[in-house]
Length: 80
Image (cartoon, rainbow, N blue to C red):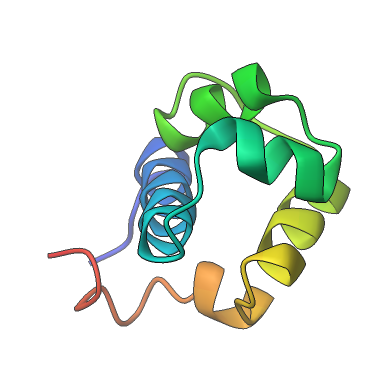
């Protein structure tokens, strides 16, 4: 099944939120680590906005995520 762009961005946001929560970080904590505004992080996690690739890479790096895992839309077992 091919996912829409909206579905893909929703999955990205969920994966970032799950990784942040697993590390017991608030959005403000993640802001301090990444320089990405906490409001922007909230909007990404809730699929309310797109974001720069550089922001996604910075978030992935600080959350110790492989960026390839963020964009793996073939295996959705981590969010279902």
